[in-house]
Length: 202
Image (cartoon, rainbow, N blue to C red):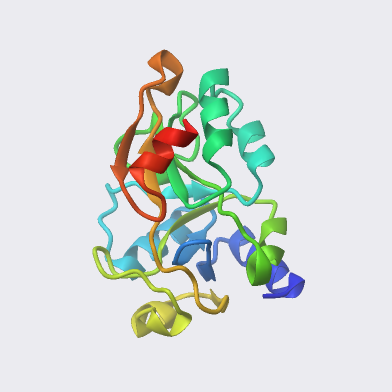
């Protein structure tokens, strides 16, 4: 992964293209969060129902917190304890940002900020958020290597970035939508981080 690769990725997203890229967990698909055509293509490649939400990924935590300025202080602290890292956080979205990512629940948003180190570090310079989902058919196995991504998906994207072998374990999903009210949370899916580790951090 090079700085040129990261710049090409950003340009692809900026025009509503669909990119296949490496994250800190598995390979993913990304597009501009507000591009109806880009989101339609991404969902079609996965065979994913359009009423299922996706996540919005930022590549910089401070940028994410600045954009999502309406997150309360308690929630913001929780986000800082977990991100960047292999988590998808469901947070309250009273401003109804990124509606294409939210499915039927516009007041709840999936948030990702990956921890990009080593060979993937150049991607951390990306300054725009992306709507992202794993690079597999809906319900299918996650891809640890670029070669494991189904051929139909690889043919359908505008850009492929090879980040080598990834950990291959999906993100842990944590629901923080009530956290501002009573510090309540739920681990909806144990992935790269265990529920016990989430509890220790929070």
